[in-house]
Amino acid sequence: MSVPAEDRGAPDPVPRSSFARYWAAAAISSFGTAVSAVAMPVLVVQLLAATPAQVGIVNAAQFVPYAVLGLIAGAYTDRWRRKPILVWSSIGRAVSLGAIPVLWLTGVLEIWMLVVLLLLFGSFSVFGFAATQSFLPRLVPRSRLVLANARLDQTDAAAQTVGPALGGGLVGLLGAPVALLVDAVSYLVDALLNASIRVDEPRERRPERNLLREIREGLRWAYAHRTLGPLAVSTHVWFFANGIAFTVLSLLALRSLGFTAFTFGLLLAVSGSAALLGATFAARFGSWLGTGPAIIVARAAYPIAWLLVAAAAWLSAGPVLLYIALAVHGLAAGVENANEMGLRQVVTPDALLGRVNANIRSANRTAAALGALAGGAAVGLVGDQWTLVAVMVVFAVAALIAVLSPPLRAMRSLPDSD
Image 1: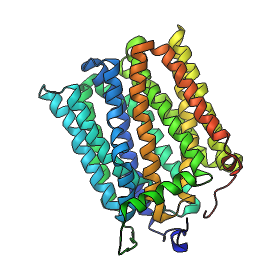
Image 2: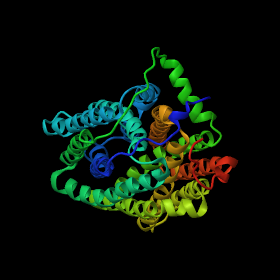
Image 3: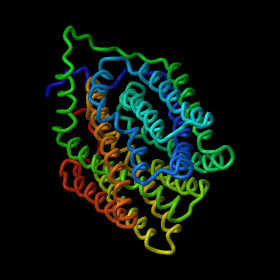
Image 4: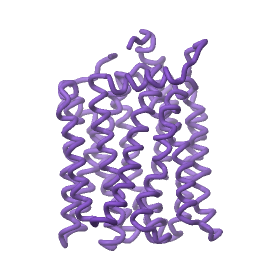
């Protein structure tokens, strides 16, 4: 597929304050999300007494819109300016999430209402994340994208470290529904900060638009590309495994092992701390080992992490193993994500970046939704122990797909263009 040469270049320089505001917005919303990571399972599992199947449905709800809207969101993200998409998607997420504690405090919240609100939340997220991942190359030179992604991942990991511990405390003090207000407010602050960014966003004027053709262009680049294609498939399998994994993890920790909201928050905080460490060294690790091999090594660590989680379900030392396992998982995520996102942003032309990001993320989130549903069903059928064995196997398949990609194995440094 031919791409105009001008679309391959780096964007014009923008003030550092623009990236700083973008970074701050991402940090604040990440902090709120980390609080929700504790509050939401407690609300669903303990307060609403959901069945394993209902837990899977709730976990899947916010991801289902990616399957329905993802391809369309990608095409329109490449048509529209990305900053307004960021702003309005954050406002939409704030409203839909903020409605949950309102319904709870009025005494009418039920599982089906929660599912509807999370579907709405996910719909705004589809557009928001398509714009987020495509907006960054407008703020920093492409040669520094891995470092910029690492900075964002460091902040996200820091939020995941402090947020769950604080979230557990807030849940204990105020209750899970009220704690969700922290996340809703964080999205409003996110919207204000992104609205204040000064950036030039020229849009290519095309007299004739064809939505289906534009969608096909994005799909072709994402899956026919010699490096992105295998990596995307591996990532989709990873998200399916992760959807199963964190559905069964909440049930295992909060029910089988008797974790409180605070200790469950500490468990997620351990993962966040390890991710912070991984993100800190992600660029250096990718430079030393090579971008592709760094992704492969990180992806190979996940089966090991969830082998430990599976062992935790069988052994009396379970809680200790859970903390170790989540640390390995977080460390791998911190190393992997910055290198993977940098690779995708560098090899994809700006004119296609919205579609490629949305297409891959939509497939990822669809896989996560299917994984969450499968996880809830599997726990109900065979129990959490055997479900975790299956999780380990699926993570291993994701790693194997990456290992078997010669272009990914051979990619030592990121090209200026592709």
